[in-house]
Length: 528
Image 1 (cartoon, one colour):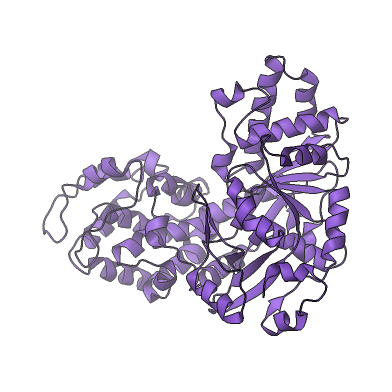
Image 2: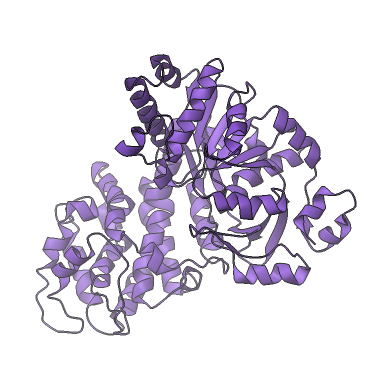
């Protein structure tokens, strides 16, 4: 069984379906022809998240029979992805959805009609230029990570031959401008705050510099800034697509599916002809399009206002997901866990994150209306965290914790204060912050040293707690005032917030000796 068989007229569909493979229900060749002639969507970034999510959403839309155009992928960073993950399989791929039950679902993704290298050194650039000059083009989108939106003075000065992704995109937008100031939407699908504005800032920077240097007309800048011509909507995306999993490779091989080799490029992109991804996913997009859009709502995208997208992101980051992750990271490291899926099976940890979300954070949650906060937390705790295929670790999540605490917990505490809510309701969130003072010591609950995860403030904060010793009676915990008054770390002075002394008391218990972390966590969670 090979993917390219599906483009022949005599493949054995019954064999694929008998082994649990969902096949495309649309005419692949017709969709490719329609898209080549009148493309509507170009996506920049051919990595795993694209194939597992945006491309799969379009595949679902095509399966309804209500749409007939695919997506053209363009790779700006790693040319080998096109050569090794797309070309050998004629742009087909397999999406393996990893269920929390431990089972998998398999779906062939055939919505990608072309895969192009987005760089002028390749012939593909001429095809991209042709596409950008087509009136039918409605949207370009991105999954290139937040780093992909960067630019610097050197690249701005290169003129119309930039190296960075947004410079190349701006050059292509200039082609669209020259073709008659044709409308287009520039849509980020990356997991970063206010992502549309980040793309917009980069595009404007290139265009304005080129206009200043006399390389393009000022009218090009005016075109980009005309919201009736070019829009930059915000979105919130959430889906985990880890590296190809050994267990998935073995399951596919047992089926007789031959396209299961691992691919690693010279730039250390890890991929395969298959993509494994968690089952839960969210994509909420600001519905602000200047030339129409592909009907991704048929695949499950939620289209709404910019304000609502912002509320969804705030709900996720400050209440319903990110804070729970950080709580698990701190205590997972202290309790010796090295897998999130194993940690969530711990009764104390499970109750810990449930009660943080449902009891302490929920009174200040931002309800976006399009997603239910209670259901969002429920899916996170009951489906996403226990997934045995997700090889995520507390140690990875604990990276840069000092940079995360102000948003993930400081904002909740601030809202309690500004709204006049009863701060005695805050018990387990203070316990997270107390746990951080214990985590900084780099000794787990069994007394075994561990290396805290990388963090720009790690050494500085560790020096604050260095006078403290685990298991020593009658020691002076006065150094904690220097830590918990740090507004840059916690978002506010925790003593001014009326929580400093409470947290100090928790730290004393956590430092009592071996087993103190477990005992303290169990006590507070049980009493809560």
